[in-house]
Length: 412
Image 1: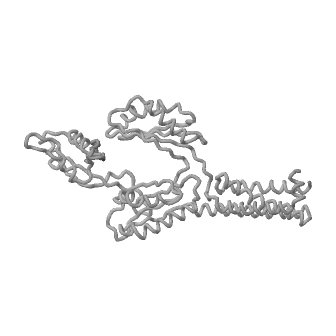
Image 2: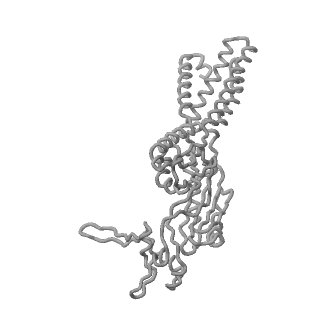
Image 3: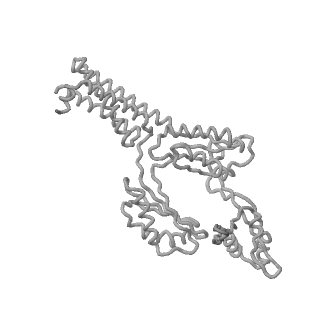
């Protein structure tokens, strides 16, 4: 028995099936994430290597070129780009769309192990996987209140330590972009006259500080039936820790850092300045997870920002100014396509009524439009698709085909 004979002989079963199709289709539509455009992520892997004190030329010659030699033969690689800076170098690898990121990460890691050797004091390369579609969909600017005399640039460290975690915990948030501001750091200002008077050089000071600013494992110690791990903790935590470091000791004379330099907290040299409406600020961008519902994620972020402004940020006399999000564009674009689908469906039904000259035949053909469209959402949701302008446009184009197929079914 084919599907046509089955449908004619068992109309009740068919009607119940159509009702279930509509119910599950509407449920799938409710659960589907809304986005402005479909996710088309180009797999991208970055390899970052740090070599403190090295010039860009040294980083390029000793690190980047060696890494490029072993990485250029990875399957699926379409582009490789490198950048060299003071003390750091980065190699960015872009792969074909559809490449398994986990497999690519493993291949990159294995290839990096083939590098013969790195110069002394070079850190282990850090591998990160990103995607070309992970651009911020929300922008905010952190600004000071009018009665706050403290420059907003000095709040970068506070944001990283106290505020960032609240935004990263929001469901659907993948990462944050933070631009502007200066991080807090310890400044050691050497006095050249006193340095020369003690017969020291700047390299002597640097070497001693590097050797002292470390935590070292001292093994284990057995006490009864228990073993205790012993560590010597010597990392600098305050200016006093640095001031008391002995640079040179000759007999009864000891030269400490405080004898040749001043040590105090300060801020790093600003590299970027963020200006919004003629006011300085710190830019914060929110990047979504792939496939996240942008509308729901934005609502959750907005709720979190309102709570932060009323509680934690208010105590510091600063606030997050909401600048941009995609909700108006997503809603207007989707509403426009929905409107076009509705108008197209109504016009198609009117044309059918004019040419078929039968109300019953028109109703039968017209019923195929909503049933087929709503039923489509079941499979879209099952396949992990999202509702965006492109997918809705495809549905709009399919309305004409549905009418043609419905007429063919009627004639048969």
